Image 1 (cartoon, rainbow, N blue to C red):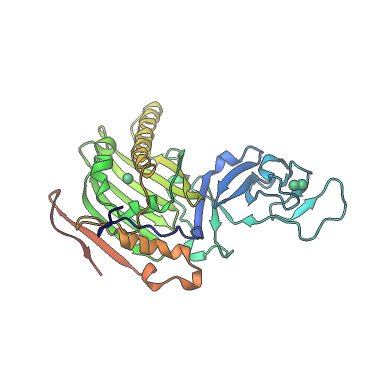
Image 2 (image 1 turned 90 degrees about the horizontal axis):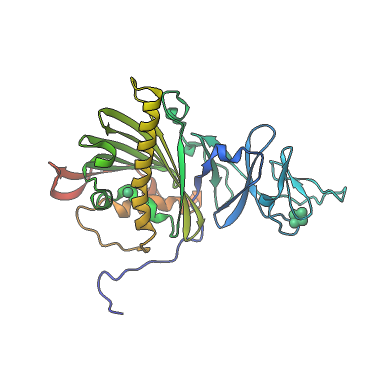
Length: 358
Ligand code: FES
Ligand SMILES: [Fe+2]
């Protein structure tokens, strides 16, 4: 193999999965009285609704003889293993064995912290078993609770690559024109603690006709990107919300749970709004499909050769690193406030790149 200065290198994928809140899908999907199988973080979870209405997520592998609780059934607020009928409560403790009075004291399954918010179900993952970090809770987005907005419409993709590929996108200025046909006219990134934001004024025929499309996209932790967009659609201003959430299945695959909500346009009839929302959601899903196609057909690269008009890819990865070390080892470098703004004028690129504003 010929070696040269830009020979691609890629170290091993981190041993641990990222620490933070991860979406398992639309909350409603889990509320049908059945146990649900969720493959994530290299293991299997069972998700079910208890009698109190709350959603519970437990490790699915039964400690008795390894049965799959997610293939069992729900009884009251417990999930019953299909193998020998042991049942486990929302706290993960063993509650009953149908053929034995005395319960082995150590029999329990792991319980995951859950948060049902913005019409999604989220779980907290920490390799070291830590509780959710209070300053990193997910924001409640009013759009998801307002009658002026549509419900969140969810779609799901499975991608066969490590999920860092998707997170790179937060700083990837260069792909917007090539992949989406929507070159930005303004582009900036802000990194701050566990959050990373992208501010963009773009042009997207698909999502905004000839009007500018404004997007403010923020990662709240490693896996939940909440995007507020405002653009034109026909004769109307359209405001939308995109929830782009990645959850690792294994080190080399992840799920995207993608939710789209649209603000109803005042003055339109219910039916008109419905058809506009349907169309808009479909177009927003198509736009993500364009990224999916790329992720499905690329490789991991640790030493991307960047040009001066590329966004702060290395800085985004430094920010992302904080989720892969114990809390006590998170570096100041990966959490400090940093702002980058691309220098673009008149839609064409004039001068070198990223200005470091701080
Ligand atoms: S393996 Fe679950 S009850 Fe036996
Ligand atoms: Fe993209």
